[in-house]
Image (spheres, helix red, strand yellow):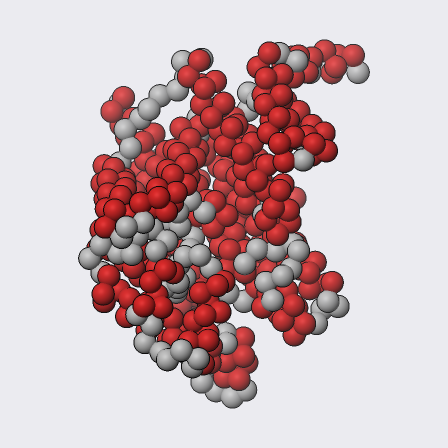
Length: 474
């Protein structure tokens, strides 16, 4: 026993070093600004961060998890505290690496520099020409902070094994949201009708995000867990991963997000096509059979009910017409970051008081931006042609980098090959989802929705730069 205590003494000494005390003090100070009692409630969390301070990969996993798992619906105050603390931790970890002379700034793919140049230019130009300079600067500031977080995650990945840890954080957050979703069904005595009406449609649940955001987490959790399943042959390990996948699948079915289900199908089929072509054809055949069954009773009635077909071709058509009417008049420079809401009524093609206008009004007050319900149209309506160009360049850059990484690791490290294929498939799935939902890719620094995509992108870029460095060294 004494031997074990002395073996861990260095860890406990770390807590009482100046560095540890400074981090604990600053974190507690930030917490106390919001609520005095929370500073004391979070002492265990602070100590945990301190204990593993020299395990950067674990810190990254915890940061990603807490960013995604703790949302405004659980506690707006708690979310704000954790976000400030996590950003501070990312900064301190970078400072630590710099002081230890371990921080390097590797060259990133040139496609990413092109995207950033076009995107920042689009933000600035659209803000100036739309006459919303201060609103634009606010959105730009939040976006720059978010992209700084993305760059910090990229810089803090220290080796190939560490590249998995941010993904573990996403899986843990997805599992957390999946369990909460299932528990919420239990709270209404497994009444699916009540669950749908009270839990999602009212948007007033205490323990949930918007279902489309939850769907993003579950999508990432499912695809990443499916790939991790093959990493070890241990029965306990495979049973654990199988349990996680089962919970995530149940959650995915319950939230009933059509765009996420489409993204899951696209991601899964692409993954199979790249890894197991035979299973790809089997799955594609099965999917086509299911599609054919949709036209046969009673399956067609179930399909229309589950996928809300009437709403899909009704309400979506209304918002598309309204957004397109605005885009036709503001396509060149856009309405400015977040400016679509201010101008959508200027070009609305429906009479005031009509059912269509009343639905637009409900949509108008529900969200601040992203009214186009389409990522590409959202970028076009807010930022004009440069915004649309930036969205297409990002799509090209992600796919090209992902394919390059897959090709680099296919022969030398199978696990990283499968892992990079999963990240690439998720990116493609998200871009396809972007035709039906605006969020989840690039939304003016929205951490809850955009972090999974950019965390995956950071991992891919790290693997890309690592392989280039290895090639040059050889």
